Image (cartoon, rainbow, N blue to C red; front, side):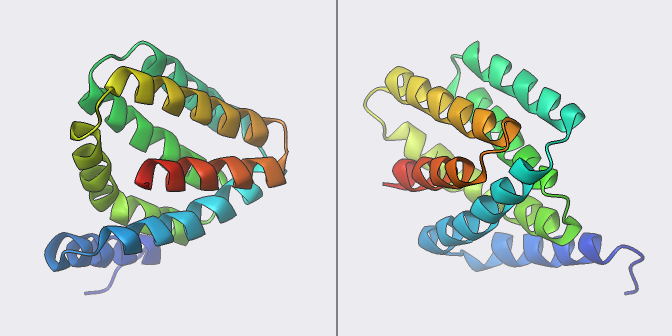
Length: 155
């Protein structure tokens, strides 16, 4: 099959692979760390006002969302938007491709939490710190915050 957009072709292949091979959660987390720490560093160096505004709207919607499933969907949109800010279509395609696997382990984890309200409050605060660091061009802080956010939830 010939595809005009290499990122789209890669995205399709990765989505199929992740969906059919039962990738280990630890591998998904490690890939997220690689992609998202790099992406927020890049994004902090060149913030896009439109995408940042979209991310801000997602954060506001998460603030008002009590339902864990809808919250986690917004969370996924937020993370994908941050990766997109970096401007690399292949990195964005990889992130989009593993999104289902990410959503699966994040959703499964949420069902086992003793206090979703407290966890959601913590996640919202972490998202705001990541967002502020990217918006303000603080690459080191953005990387630190997203690493702590991803590994903290995984733990």
